[in-house]
Length: 368
Image (cartoon, rainbow, N blue to C red):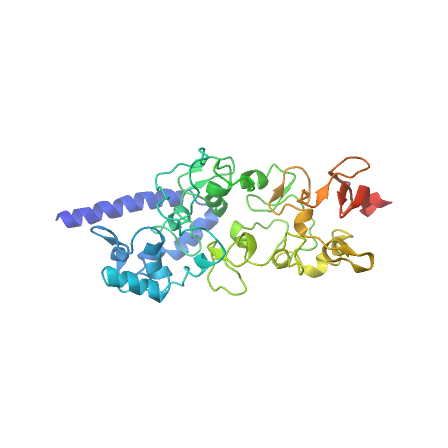
């Protein structure tokens, strides 16, 4: 009788918590959840052992942190070694995510003993060690394929803690937003994606530019994207989705060159959403090709998109304009470093780049 009572209490608590998570979702997300019925880990075809796959009377079957998840989400050798040491259980392969966590650019789940399930966000103490564990982004009791972050905690665009994240970016903001323990080179993504900015990629809200000739046909100016649209496993080789690990810099789904010193620059990531023929055809800026590919006859070297654009958002200018100080300085004539938008496809730049002063250089109708 006591065993039955424990089961009833356990299921009741899980229903209450899941209900709170569901009620905080958008209408679209709720409909997805309903169509998916219940959490992935509660479906017997996915998890034939039920709760016993993860839980035992003395703790976790696979051990702490990521090794527990590798019971089903790792390679066969990992599962075999765990099952040999612990109780033998029938596991179902859900794809080997451990391979992505061995990539050079990854979330560092291999750092053990740092995760605190009770930690508060955003982090205000710069001495708190940075870490990433599966449970920082996923709640195994609630997640479903369409919403892998369902049930996870988050931080909203205003920096407020949320017990249940409604959006993917709110999970990312826990570590990549206003957290005080970020490395000094990492910017605050909450500030960059803030809809109050002059421009931003449409992650938190739809963008402010309603004329985008370069967009692929699947997107329009009212489209929104996610952090995982750009960050995650390499789309060219990996069968698994998720922001786990990648061979590409910055944990990107496709190559993106930021440094001019690279012999063969790649901008596959940008061309995923912005048609290459439009960008190099100068449809939105008359000197795009010149800036990207360079001009061999003049011995001008091409430069990266990031030399002029902040791919997350600009707190100062339209069109994601934010000059990279590694390559762009104030021009020697006016002593300015500035961009002036002067209408559709028209503007002026005050700067010095590649030893060339723009004081200013104009384009579009402002060039007349």
